[in-house]
Length: 496
Ligand SMILES: Cc1cc2nc3c(=O)[nH]c(=O)nc-3n(C[C@H](O)[C@H](O)[C@H](O)COP(=O)(O)OP(=O)(O)OC[C@H]3O[C@@H](n4cnc5c(N)ncnc54)[C@H](O)[C@@H]3O)c2cc1C
Image (cartoon, rainbow, N blue to C red):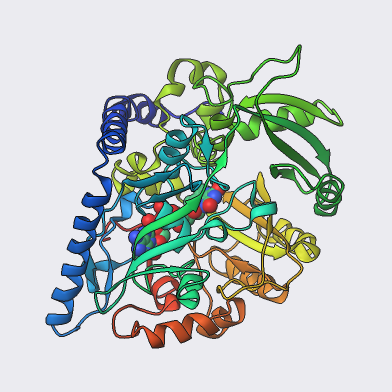
């Protein structure tokens, strides 16, 4: 269908503004990150910023603890689809967005929670390092990836983003600043992930480093079912990255990736993130359609990490169909900023226009039950492509229930449901029930319609409840269900 004129105008007139503001923002962030690295001022500045947070908590205590607290992080900065209405809370400005300490000898980095993963990956890559997990979208913040959960194609061996974290620094409800790790304040350490700012204000995170290599050798393999994906995974378990993209119920591309420093003779490098290149999922689909049993190519490491940023997976091409025309991308592809919050600078109504009628949900299920869930969703949702990301879940004290066998699959739906019987609430409630019945859980950055009882069935809050009691969180922060449940959130409001 030929794109409508107002959509073209929107793309051509509004997005180029990001050409001006995007680089200014990036240059400013680059200079501030690098200057602190060379001047070694970041630790002192960090302590001053944390003291300001403590001060705000003390003001809240002095004011008689009348309302509960939340971060003042504005809705437009957040990628999460649903937003908590923060107007009724005492809002604490956290705004920590710098790198604190690069410990090359210790092979770890300590960062503030507002640092975005795209900044961090590039900052480290230049110095020959990377973090074990680099979620795809440039603009996800480290704090959001921990308190709201993060996952990526290396999760099949490294788990969820927080499972790689070595320690946290957090400001608690009494204004104390506590450092916690697996060995120190272990319960607190385990309940920060997925807590959605209901335990305290995260102020620093220490993440291990691994050596980065220049390229990813990517092998595209076809399969026709989740069972097929699993058996490919079992036959090749040692890859650095594994991701699946389902283009229909029986049409799945599985990509196995390995970090390498050299490109095999006769092979060239595909710079998949250049502005004129097709969106990554379209590229993978075109390879799948050629019918190869195996297709190998090399892509630069940073391009691989952020391969879904340009299209926010397939959300951008799904809502602005003309971005799929190669001629449009050649002339105007540069207008698609990878910096997602700047897309939110468009008035919220415009963003609503973009996303109306779309579903954005992730469900994590034991691999053995994933096909059943996938089939059910095919019947009542029918959204394609579907993101398939294997994840290893350890049994520990976090809220995320693991049956102990480790093999899970994240099934991500981002797009317009084509199922005739789709209902915006009823269908998602059916999927929540199906998810619970199959020992899975959904990611809470998206929409949730569960009752409190269903929520407790889906998540194990034993340690979370214990920590909330011992650190007097109940008077200070809402319970996680009250923060993310159906009554707590407005869909895409600008209130927060
Ligand atoms: C289309 C789409 C695709 C996605 N794809 C991926 C993906 O590939 N991989 C992935 O991992 N995730 C993905 N996500 C989900 C995303 O990781 C989560 O939504 C994540 O929480 C968003 O990060 P954010 O920086 O926007 O966090 P926010 O939405 O800003 O924060 C999430 C929660 O963390 C809390 N928080 C943030 N900072 C602090 C702090 N300093 N102290 C206390 N609490 C804090 C916030 O209050 C909030 O409750 C996707 C989301 C969408 C919409």
